[in-house]
Every structure is written in C-alpha cells, then in structure tokens.
Image 1: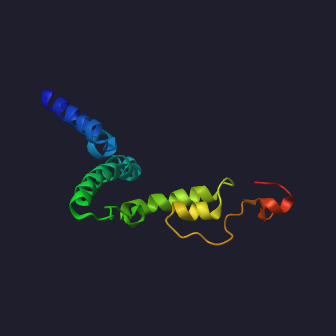
Image 2: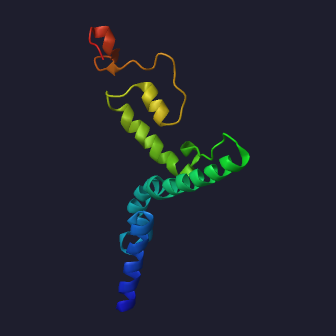
Image 3: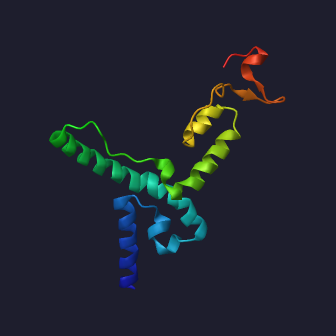
Length: 135
C-alpha cells in the first residue's frame, strides 16, 4: 500500500513541478478523452515555456559572443500535435460574430486577406457598416 501511495505522490509531483497535464502523468486520470484534451496544454503550459526560457538564454549567450541579431524561435503552426487544436479553435471563432476573418486566419497561422476585416452580421451575412452601424 505504501508503494502505491509513493507512486501516486510521484505522479502528482511531476504534474506540479513541470506543469505537465495530470492526464499525461497520473494513471488514475488517463482516459482517451482526457489524454486528447491534455495534449495542447502540454505544449502551451510545459514545452513551449520551457523552450522559450532555454532559447532566451542561448540567444543571450550567442549575442554576446557573435554579435548576431538572430534569435532562436519556433513556429507553433509547424507542431503536428497542435494542428487539430488550432483547427477547432478557428472553427469555434468562425461561429462567433465578434471576430473578423483576418483575425481567425491569423490565429490559425495563415496570411491575412485584403478586405477580410469587415465584420459580417446575420440577415444574409451583410457587412456591419452597410447597415449604417459603426463597428
């Protein structure tokens, strides 16, 4: 019994120390649904902040030595594990009337389109400014 309690304490310690989502480290919370939901949070809460800290330190050391203006960086849209999350986020944003098409495209990592910043409202999807309203 003490051994099982020790495993439980260690799993919780990994969760607290490294910000790794609980469904990825604690066996009692590992279900398929929890696991799939936790993957984006693994990157946003654990992997990417850790990388940013390491990249910042390496960049500072390299700047002092080589006088370069380059920085270590990453493109979050090139991470395959986050693609499904970004697509669902863009889909959810498209269902609201509070954001423009370009805002949705930028959140998904796509280039902005010209004239896509008009806010569309219902009644046949007309532009908000066409009805005399100001955004």
